[in-house]
Amino acid sequence: IILIPKNIRGRSPEYIALFWCESTMKISPTTSILSALLCRLNYLASANDEQSYRVFPQRTSKEAAVIEWGHSAIISALDGAVATFGPQTSQGANFEVETSPVLANPIDGVGRKRKNDDESLSDFDKEYPGKLKNADEVEGNMVIMTDAAGLSGVTMARIAKESGAAALMVVNTDQNAGDFIYSLEPENDEEAAYAEENIDIPVVMVSLQAGNVITTAMATEDMDPNDVNKGAGLPERVRLYAGGDRPFFEDAMSGKPMVYLIHNMLTSEECDELIRMADGNYDRVDDTNGVSNYLENTIASKKRGE
Image (cartoon, rainbow, N blue to C red; front, side, top):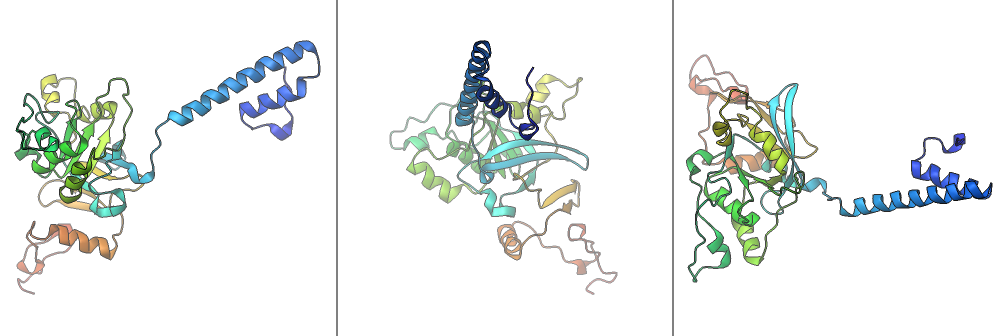
């Protein structure tokens, strides 16, 4: 029986064990032996804790991203690690994406394609297999690709970007680390230069388990597994945003017109940047033409031109 003084109750088990070791060493030989054993166990536990802290992956807030789907009280989300290239979480609204997820075809970006052996090309260009087979489906959406082919992060981002994707989710397929994720980085100066100039879509990595979750999110028992493998179990739409922050917009209705819920106020700089990025990509709606603009929460004038 160990009587613990009030002044150390609530402290960590290691602290209490150390207190007991120090206070019982001189009571009796038997107690001293028990104390020595307990102190040794305490030391080993502390050593194991220190070792686990040393090897546990550390991520800063700028590397953390969330992939979310659902509405109201029914929301599912995955943890992701943002690549060091492409849009970063510090860019706020310019990092966030709301779109549909699509499986890459081939799923690893390569399939049966052979590496280009043209000696006039750099290693980076030789590794590039070209656009995805389903580039038309990928365009404007978040493409989900595995790292099973051993491609570099920048090469996978290049495939996604040139296939028209709005964002890239890379699934870490390491069978021995089902929960492990890390920030993809350029592997050499050529990749770094290419990414700086060309990669303007968010790139995140999710774990193997997370990849399995999102690809079966909408799957049902009566669904054909082959259809699930082709993306039938994916959510209709997902939102990508920086960890710790809700998205600035969320689609409330994915039909036409698209209706969004605004969660966070945008700064004037973010608004200007969004307008700049959208310039030439949409037709501005004028509420004087008799058509209501639900997206901007405006009702058309009863009389055209007024």
